[in-house]
Length: 245
Image 1 (cartoon, rainbow, N blue to C red):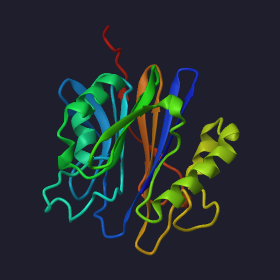
Image 2 (tube, rainbow, N blue to C red):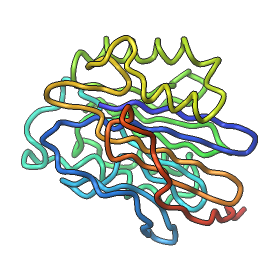
Image 3 (cartoon, one colour):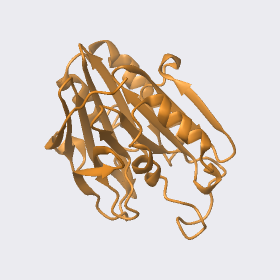
């Protein structure tokens, strides 16, 4: 249950990620600097299983994941033998490029995971997303008009259409940070399960993560509450390093 958008402006990449979760889930840990192989990265951590839904490394690569809610999903996690999907993010964030993430994803035994959409984006490359439905992996790229990425456990198709329609109606005006933040705070068409800032009796938008990458810095801003209660504040940053040829 999430909504993701990203934008490129004159050498700067900005990504916003609304994380929607059940009210019974443990609170997440705020974004922090971590290490994977030779890479340093920033990520909040899931309070139940220790993985993440969004991470950004010191090369400016961002990897994120939305749950898929396919009909093939069944059983409790992880007792039914599934691996937590959030661990995919932290295991792939040491890759230097978008293509590297996709290549490794193709080699994994994905039958050990419930359905998901895993995306990778870097300013210098077209974004790509791998959609795993429990049976096959389909990879699409940014030219397919994938934004915004949306998932919902409630009336999935209808919610996705509604949020994407709101995005399309505003897309021409999403030219600055404030306008983009307003989209992720939005209660259009009304406060509830369809709105980007989601509110249901059993679930809600629990956080908003904003990642900003420019030529010298990778920064993560974070709000550990529904975005309608206030935008994210700077939490952690890394010096960006150059990708070796």
